[in-house]
Length: 307
Image (tube, rainbow, N blue to C red; front, side, top):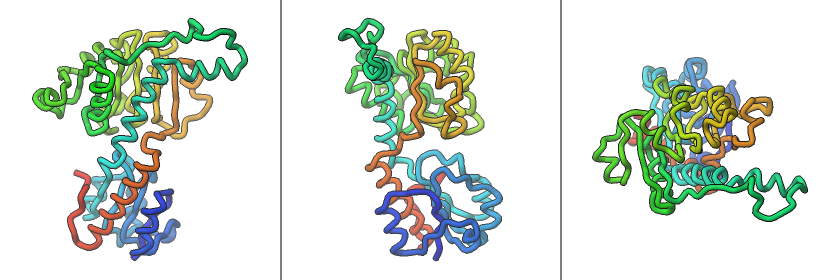
């Protein structure tokens, strides 16, 4: 059988694929493929109409907004993903970004490299501790829960969560106080963590009105998806010091251009969608999605079907 893969995956996962199937990557191969494994490649009607023998699509990652799920299901094509494989890596990046911004690490290294650092502990690099701060968790999926665990246990942070799909009772078991609305959570947060999927209900959910209720000392980190936070509104809030700092691993257009207004701000820290880009996560995602592709092809129920 032929399996379509046109993006890098972990060598161990590629070896597993090649041990059982022929791996192809060209557009002209699509009509003959039984499965497709994608990371960021968009799978829409053009691909699906061409892939007449396609039985299963595997998403290498958690977010599957690049796949037209409804069209795939209409055609009887299964879709699988890896909802747990990169949880730890993304959560660790989120915490790293909070630390980097709170302690002004980017500004510190720039000052030293520029040769303009004339003293130790310069006042302009006075940071803040994460310990004891309130974390506003926007979205309470697996990644946010891991962020909560790290910051709650490791830094003794108070946790406030907003997620209409998670009950107050469930949050209580995680030592998270449930906010009744988005703005309530944002108002409470010294640290604001964005961990929601991108869909019609979350696109642009953090805009001018929402940023306007945040504390001027707050730090916002988005490792979820571009398009959730309005980038123009974020630029305005940061440039007016209505928000202390922000970091984003994700953008509406990726990779972002250097001419993007946010890039000019010293209190904004960008990273190029590296949340899941660790050796461990890439291995887990690759092996998990390949095993589920073959499960479907062999008539066995996959571990992680897209709901």
